[in-house]
Image 1 (cartoon, rainbow, N blue to C red):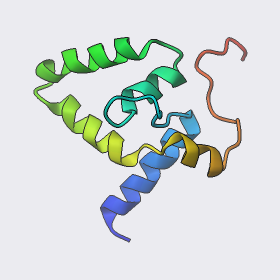
Image 2: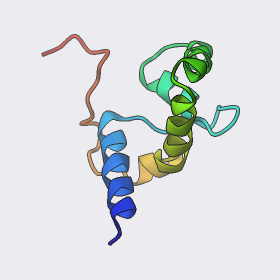
Image 3: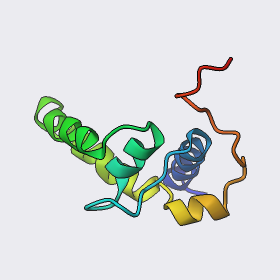
Image 4: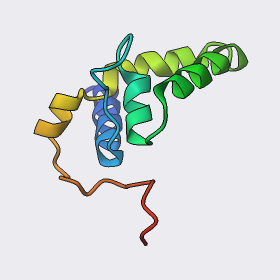
Length: 96
């Protein structure tokens, strides 16, 4: 197995554990909408932060967006292939 395939599998699994997926409500690929849905915030805020960070990081953020759009699972695929059930980390929960 090639190195990039292994990296894709590891990152995709980490995103599934955290519960982040591409949303169907997104404008381009659904990355920002999926992040916003997961952390329960307005997708416009995530999009604006993403756009503001592009000139600051010298297009590094754009590269991250492209990588996430390739690696992040779609919502329907996430629900069908969720090996962890509902045992992902809920960052909004106050329970310990």
